[in-house]
Length: 344
Length: 85
Image (cartoon, rainbow over all chains, first blue to last red; front, side, top):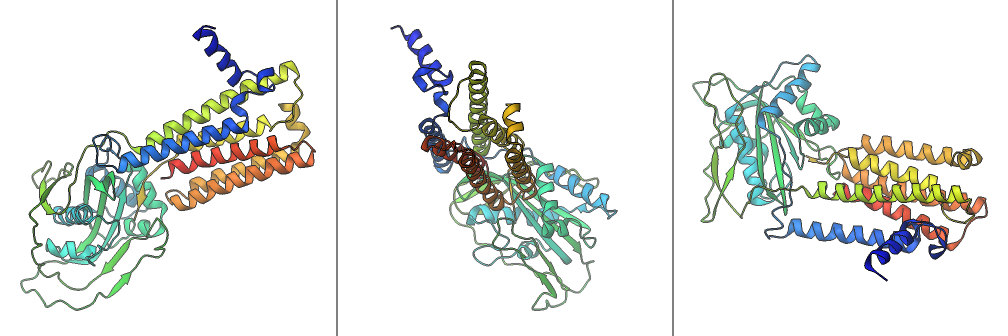
């Protein structure tokens, strides 16, 4: 038997209801369905492991987004404008604090508002000598575009409260690419503040914040934002010790400001581990594509099998094709319209 | 297919209502992936139960049908779970 004939026979056996497959497409038999499930699980495990590995192939997998600081500020102000709130203006000092926070998260490898060493968002603001009456922070990672990310924040009550807080007048944003907890990602740090007008005499700081709103749902993946209110000037922070193994972090383009120079690709040096930039494929998109392919294959097989069985009036005791079709159409819809990303 | 749908109208209405509830809740819970995963598992369990019950009621149940629903439900659930990571 020629290879062509053999392939044709296998193909028919797989899709065409006939005596060899008990008049039901072989792909819809339980053993083949479990085989397909096993293949999907294997594919997921292999790509997941690769994305975590420190290999050339591993660096190809990651989240590459088109999020920019300009867009984050633009979409944030759009949301505020909808509620008639005043726009928050870009503050380069606050953005510097946000960058330091992002750098700290990459170098110490954590995903939280407070670092493992107990450093809070406000400590980064003090480092850059940003004095505030009220301040807040939103975090996001793994998003591919700005509208999805801002929509996710608006979907969470605590993040929404930060964006819609009428007391904020300034914003600082850092959009940084790097490896966080084993995955190439785009990390976004958004800081809000209302500055204290500078006085000639710097008063002694009080010992505790006036009011602190902590995470409302710390167990969930969507942790709440933090928002602290203080009535003091920040003191000058001590210089962070710099380790021997420096890591350069490249930041995306700064937003243009009317009365200041446009800074492109600013670089700072932070201590810590190795950070690589430039993923090409988001693992989530790879899994999405694979899932869509599997769903389409089953939808095609179910439709074809149903049509052949109907035309030939084949009597058989099998699962309901209409129900299976509806289920995989739902799966296909979810896979196509699923939006990723994590906020904190 | 339409004959099948008309013959088991109540059964299919329950199924499609379940799917609609899943879709609404799944997208409502975004970006909380934990809740989305729970919804995906719930959908798989609902579908498997629906399949087995509807076949038991029509006395068309067999090990083959049982495992077919199990395979389809498990595959659909895993495809949904996969993208939430």
